[in-house]
Length: 241
Image (cartoon, rainbow, N blue to C red; front, side, top):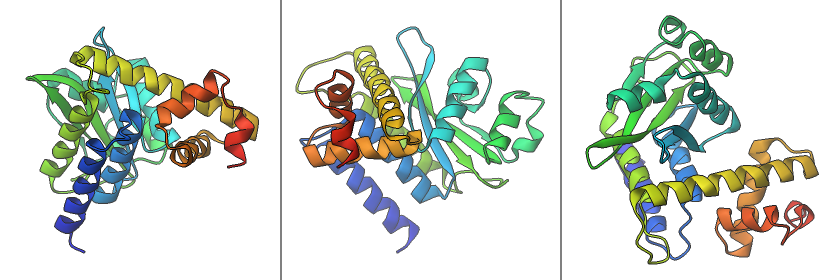
């Protein structure tokens, strides 16, 4: 299958989910990071969005090591997603070994995590930059994320559409939609922690257990997480599934 055909198939799958009856924002965004990896060949992908106060928050990522990096750069105030959000344009670093002067704390952490290059592209809404999509490559390369930047930007634009998807027919402002999605992400992290502790799992495996339970029960990942956090279902139910 050609790259164009794979891209068309991936976008068809994502848009089909977006208009489907069981749409779940956080699950969709997680799938989008997986599609980013598949289409661009990178080792990791993550999404950050600005909350009501304008502060960046991580909302979706392909793995726990990406989440840790996203959380770190927000905490220390340096890194590709912050630069991308600030300037409103993509940030490309072909070799993180040469980025120590630019990001003295982030670059060594990214290298230690196994990443060698990064591309961050902006999430845009009404002429404003509201977040960033970060692609982490495991090798030093002039084109982290591939040689078709338009494809990566299209995925970033689809992430914005997903964040602004109207919930259950209710009209919500962009800020309300993003706030709701971030709240869902917080609940999911709590549920992952509960499962990780109860089952002795790492966080990536805990998330897969949660996703599997959501699919079996016909609910969204955020709804499954709320049931666990609120005690309406026990960890054992998910772990034996």
